Each structure stands twice: as structure tokens, then as C-alpha cells.
Length: 96
Image (tube, rainbow, N blue to C red; front, side):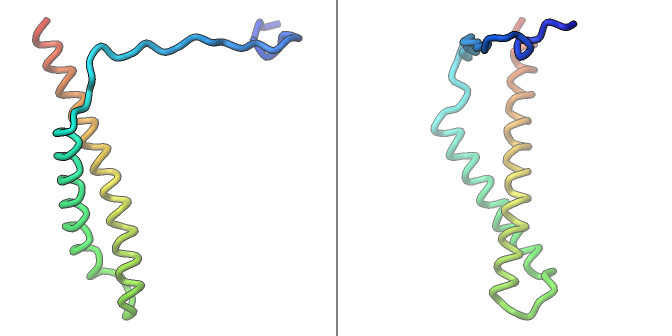
């Protein structure tokens, strides 16, 4: 039989902690740049998708335009973060 912690008769609790990053990965300037980029992207996408909402009600057009833009802006934010991580890793690999 496999020796898994949850198969033991007593409760197994692990108090190991994750290692802390060596340097701080974000700064107030990078957060401000990210916020400006995401806000600009939100407004751009909203101007595109709001014209494609199949409704005549202005409130529904705003609601669905904002919901779609918020979703796409979240994906854009993730792309920015992944780009920064890859760029940082490539620069670190080049220094070694």
C-alpha cells in the first residue's frame, strides 16, 4: 500500500514555507505603467465591442461592452505579466 500522508491514522500537517524571491519584482512605476496600459486597452476594446452588442438598449450595450472589455483586459494584463517574466528570465540568462 502506498504511504500517503492522508492514509496515516493521525493528521499530518506540514509547516514548510516557500522560499522568498531574491529581489522585489514590482515597483510603483511598473504598477502605474501596467494600470495605464490596461485602462487604455479597456477603453480601446470597449469602443470596438460596444458597437457589436445586438441590442437597442443603451444600458445593455454598456453592460455587455464593459463585461467583454473587462474580460479581455484581464487577459491583456496576464500577457503583460508573462512578457515581463520571460524578459527578466532572458536577461538573467544572458548575464550568466
